[in-house]
Image (cartoon, helix red, strand yellow):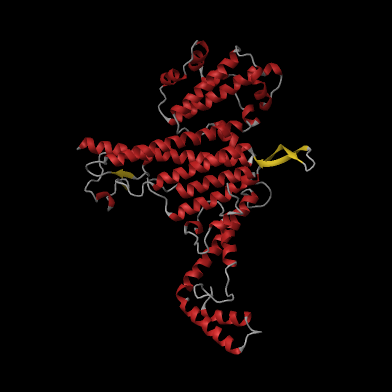
Length: 479
């Protein structure tokens, strides 16, 4: 991962800030490239010897060019050469008058982006507490919210299988590079052998990037690039989109406006995919199947990283204090009897018997199962007379495997895992939300929020591809 200080060299002098990054209503995070713009523009030479016809000689209007030249080049220049150079400067400034307005617009955009950067940097330091009284949230939560808001700004309105526009893509890359640059300074010290000149070997402490960030952050960056590549692959496609219930120009270009497939009421805002009257070609279907498989694998990888990071976060004491005294009361008698009396426990069979009808019911069940799991784990460790969760986790390996509470906790964990596998779009449980809320580790906050937004984007891409397949199948069956 490149440092933010090295990223300045990756930008051209003529780069123009996007309208998206200068929108006053933008809720995304601060942009680190404002520093790059300032340094680049300020280091651009106004006049230098020798004068080059291929470079612009002035970034201001033509009247200021002569005055600037006269103040910079007065003494030590003979009158003939002074007059010659003045005529040359005047000629070049006249030729550049056409681009003066554009340059002024660029400078205004630069100033606006710089002010926005200052505002976001201030909010980051203040912890989103504008009163400055020190009652703001911690840095970890601020950065986590910044990544989430940036994702909503860039991808919140992109509900179609189509490439991001260049402005949004540049905004996403620029501001994520700025936020992720914090990880470059999260290090740990490890012992390293060092040989002295006299041949003696000594042990020194060497700093390196923290192990969890060193492993997970490059993987998340790769997943990010793969998702952008998937969207870019739909530049030329055989299907198109129409707003729900509308007859747009694109929706009738093939003479086939989709009427038979209706969007569910809870997804009324999602655009409707449309296909030609004869359906998609085999080449297009093969491309969609390939991208769906890729997005599925990315979703699984991002979800695995997210679950791993959440599992490493400390469980807040407030959550442990809110646990019920009995795990049986948490999950209910029917589920408890099956988990306790069955010799060979099958979580899949139990989920089939429960007949979960909605995502809300699945999330409620996940909260109750997770609470009962930690209740039984705490009971299994109570004989050691240590109540804090950090000590409970350390003592789990010493617990008798035949203990009833330990068996119930393991079965509850397997049931929770199967439930999350069956409902991958399930929202975060109460414990996950509590962990994120009370987390103070900046590195974990970045990894969790980054993996969470990538997981959501991958899941959306899979859903959008499924919508196109459904419309294509319906159209061909109708014919």
